[in-house]
Length: 488
Ligand code: ADP
Image (cartoon, rainbow, N blue to C red; front, side):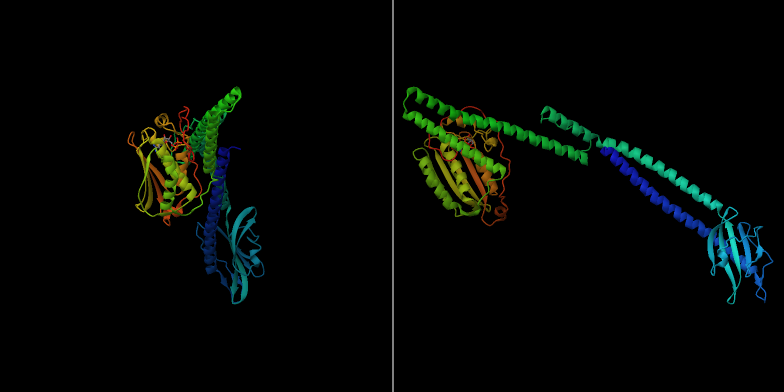
């Protein structure tokens, strides 16, 4: 059974039930009202009769004179003696209007049928002192009342049926219009499934704010997200394959050469060693990103003295910078934050390695740490070539490498370092900001919440999966000539 039919039946049933209850209440109330009117009339007639009825000293009834009945009363009167004989009657009927009422010790209203006529009868025992002297019965024909009640039932049943039918037709057509977009949704989803085309969207012209509009919007957003993820996955595969191919080709070439020459030369061995190292770093980086994106990488948070961490990193990087760039550290503040020391060190090493690698010989790299606006700010500034404006928005995407810096520098990583660093800093509740102008160097600023601050407490420990891949250029990377640090 379709949803449309189910809802239509439900609405019609609800309307039917409401009308049934309402109709029953109207019927009962009207019946009570009408019987009250009839009973009032019978009571008034009974009073009129009682006023003209006398009881002689022997206790016998004397009601020879007819009561002055109103012409509109339409009532039959019978007076029965205590011996059970009819003393007086306003009709030719000699049977009691209500044989059961004759024996009642109290006044009683009852419905009876006398000679196939439906009557309402009031039986009142007539008492003198404590003695029963007779029974007065006043009755009236209630056939009209019955007909009225029957007509009422028929009218109510017919109007209820019409109302139910109208409710059914109305809800069927309204539901048809309301649910039409759902059919479109199903069709579009089917088309997407059949054609494997995630770029399709569900067309919808109705109000965006209603339930169906919101559903269509949500589904379209889901398709958009799926399309992005799918494209990103395809790019990622292409990127990884590309990155793996270069070192493998070099290794294979060198192995072939060794075989051909039948001797192991030092250059070939070095080359194989370097490329194997590159592969190891690439796999390590990929593993880390995979862990980050799947939520398996958690942070081991503890108080970290950033100043001593910076000294440690500076000391390690001096080796890489020696003879190439001047590595300087400005005045640094003593700052403690809550963080994962190893991961933070990894970020600093990545950024410093970038600065040293991309800065030409004789350039300078500054390192600074200060407390600014209630946060810790680490600055890594270089006098390198800078990052072109068109590359700047993409450098935190995985596998992204700026074309110019790649061709200018003989050193290069895989475009994973900034993506991983950004993930780590975000997990600490912080941010990495970058300012760069071509030819004027780059400044990376890491902002982190101080130890014990609310932002530090709120720092998420489970990772988001928003590290995205980009349209990476697919040219080969220049050869790595330095002993690499992390992903460099
Ligand atoms: P890579 O391993 O290629 O350095 P990263 O993710 O660390 O990957 O950096 C992404 C890109 O950002 C680099 O390829 C480079 O183009 C650019 N970049 C990063 N740091 C600097 C810097 N200090 N100076 C110039 N360009 C930089």
